[in-house]
Image 1 (cartoon, rainbow, N blue to C red):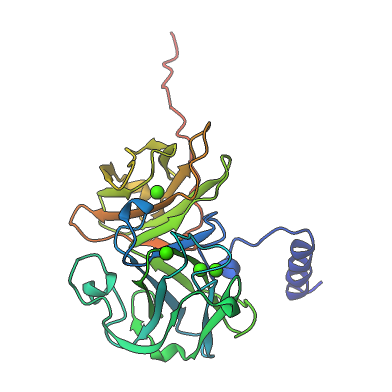
Image 2: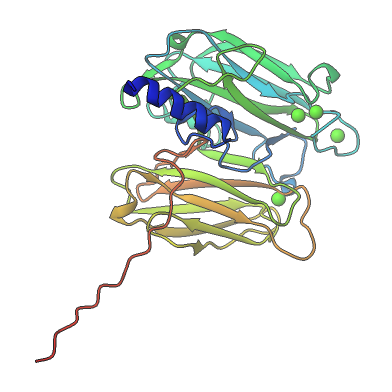
Amino acid sequence: MKPERFINIALIILFLSGITLPAMLNAQAVPGKDENIPFLVTFGKEGKVSWGDNDFFQIFFFSIPKDFNQQFYIRVFDPDCGGENDEIQGEFNSKTLFSVYGGVGADPEKHEESRGLEKGTNYKLGNQLASRVFGAEPRYDNKYFSFGPLTPTEGEFNQKWNSYIFKVVIEGVAGDDGNLYRFFLSRDENNNLAIEGANAFTYSYTFRMWNDFKSIAHIYPYVDTGIVSIKQENFDWDNDGKILVVSRYKRGIELPISNEADWARSNIAIEPQEINSSLDFQFHKRQGELVKNNNVVVRLQNQRGDAVKFYSSPIGGVPVYVPRTSVTKITPKK
Ligand SMILES: [Ca+2]
Ligand SMILES: [Ca+2]
Ligand SMILES: [Ca+2]
Ligand SMILES: [Ca+2]
């Protein structure tokens, strides 16, 4: 059998047996497949930070590999704030502005303001390619809206990742309800068709936990060259169980946790073995009385104060702890 034919048959067998390929095939859902996070969340600016969103906006970046030369779409699931999925306060009156940026200014590695971490900085740097405000709209309730078509070269090119970078800013411009939504980066306007090698990332992750004791959420920061320690901050975790850090070197370090509208901070030492891999931040819910509708924010900085990114599809894959076998030297007795 020719090798190509063998590979094709192997792929078909994998597909039929339901085994998912670890590659980039599922890299396009945001939150990602491995994260086990139901929704991102952004409250209207008249909301209370004690509901779990510290700043009433969120920014996600999408990277499109240079060799992908077709048009694509950024699809938003449940962009409206009303009906299904969303968090009502009184009655639904929130308006959420979604805007897509490309061009010079969009890449947060080159333009720090674009990360949206400092108050008063211009996180809307770049060319606005599309935007739309959503209120309570049955037409887009529990359904997708697609931004696009977008052309890869409309993004800002990043040499290091050999990709074009796009930015999506989500702002709660009015009201006090929480808009829950998620993304899919797609080749098609009406279906979720992945773009191989694409990814998404953020610097300040505001998300919703499942209302399920057994469910563990994960987010995956990438440890780049030169990092020796990371300062973590988590906000409004509502004392909901444990937050653990697992990596190929760490079996599970427990972090200090926030409670109501406060930040918990700590430093995490990074080992040389963890460079160029992802960490697995695990969010384990408290057992007993269910903490419902828990929204939480997580941010990281390295030892130089630079923000660390979370990738929807962990770079290098989900890290697996490798136990170190203690090598005991046995001196043979004479
Ligand atoms: Ca309301
Ligand atoms: Ca909805
Ligand atoms: Ca929504
Ligand atoms: Ca919360």
